[in-house]
Image 1 (tube, rainbow, N blue to C red):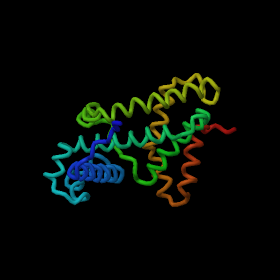
Image 2 (cartoon, one colour; image 1 turned 90 degrees about the vertical axis):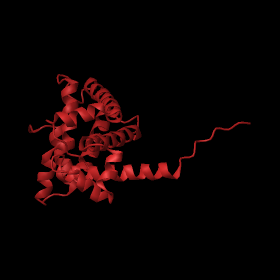
Image 3 (cartoon, rainbow, N blue to C red; image 1 turned 180 degrees about the vertical axis):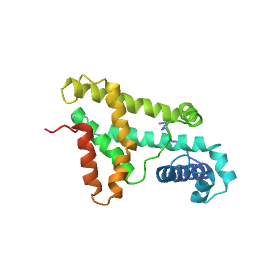
Image 4 (cartoon, rainbow, N blue to C red; image 1 turned 60 degrees about the horizontal axis):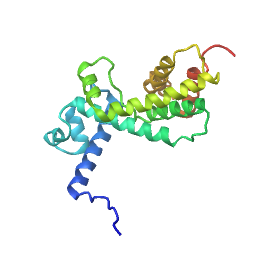
Length: 205
């Protein structure tokens, strides 16, 4: 009887993978704290405890570092979406997803990237892991949006793509940080307020 065995990963390969993950974690934290423009490659190398030359062996540019961090975020998002109960209402799944992104933001784990940077945009577009993840997440969320609209839970007059981008925007909403800085509300209260404005609007009911 022949049994299939998973090829054993060498110790060197395991160490390289662990170092790359440490680099991505550091980049993710620095992007959340400082943003792409203020983050430096020297800071990333120092945070990981390696020489800058060693860092460049893994990621040849600052843009590649950011793309790797975003690909990691997309992989997390894919895993989160896949874990949601399939029988939940589409609106409930959308609400759960938005809450998840806002908790990442409030915990300082959501990368902040500039929207107008052609070099960074090119690096993101060229990163297969990021683009594949983005397409899958967008397809899943888009499907839930259309289902929610068909059920009357979301205004069907709104283009689904506009709703999708509105939900994406909550992941980098500065309102979360502004409310947190006031120290008047807990994270749960902040999320409840922003979720209310996002899904229920501002009009008096």
